[in-house]
Length: 178
Image 1 (cartoon, rainbow, N blue to C red):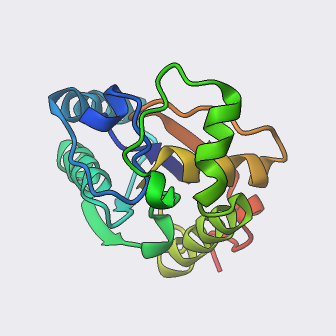
Image 2 (spheres, helix red, strand yellow):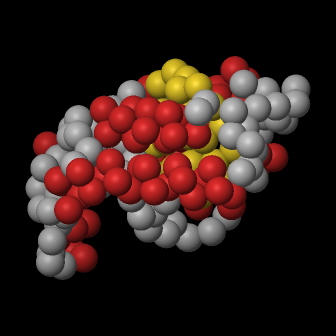
């Protein structure tokens, strides 16, 4: 089994600021979200083996909280799982702005196809390193949204903080038992 999980809330998430690669820590709500998600995962008992993450602190901390609560290994961080870069516009507020203004902010962002290529590449690396293991991949909203939409052939949808999104491993491209 392979699934994405978005990190818990940060102050920038709460304030609707473009976070990107800025290394903003979890806030208390985010820590509670991670703990609650871990408890739900434990109760669902899919038999998780380990947690891997993006190298950004908010993802690592979420992963650590989940791994500790599940009593499993916190594995490595993967650079390919880092959030989309929003360039010079990281930190900008998107609260209440028009779609046109939002699109203007994205003109300096990392292109969507590059985000998808990194996301898929990171998942393939995880599958190669941990074949046949049930891995929870803690990453970031935009990377998850675009990668899942690409893999499943759907429109991108918002991913809430600490939400778990199961993946069809066959679509990632590396058999889980190779």
